[in-house]
Structure formats: C-alpha cells, structure tokens
Image 1: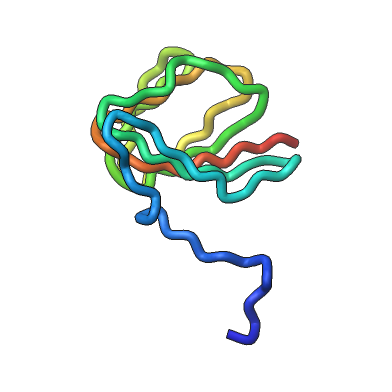
Image 2: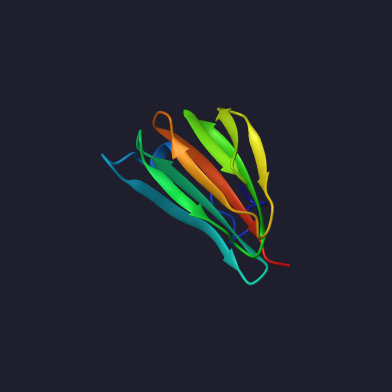
Length: 107
C-alpha cells in the first residue's frame, strides 16, 4: 500500500447502523466549499419541509425514500439519485429504513 495518501480513508456505509425511531448521520467531508454526509433513516422517520441556500445531491444507498421538492413527490430506491435545488422547499421521508449520501455544494 505504498501509494496511499495519509489523508485518504476508507468508509463503509454498513458501518453506520440504523437506530430505532431515529435518523443517524456521519459527516465524511466538511469544507467551506461543501459537505458530504451519510444518513441512516429508520422506517417512518422524516426531515420536515425546509430550504437550504445551496444545491445538494442525494444518492440512495439502500432502502426506499420519498423526497418532495416543491410538493412534487419522488419515490427513490437503491441507486437512485436526485438534485435538491437551492432555495426550493424539500422534505425527506423513509418509506422503509434507508441510507443516503448527501453532497452539499456551497460554492
């Protein structure tokens, strides 16, 4: 492994466990230009409608989720991706336990 960067690190989304009636998150990258966060939602958990001033990208790692953007409903499952546009109201609900990666772009 002589070519490894001392700043590189391997992450596995299976290490982020579901917790009953909870949303668990782990920030992987937190920089001025943006963040990368992994979330694990237990079935039925939700993030109520909100807005953020930055574009965001979501990748569903496993399970099924409903994401609403401007009240339009999107049913997503493992492998699906969606862009959450800046300043547009959106919400997230776990149809079953699911994990997602959220990439927030601040610049």
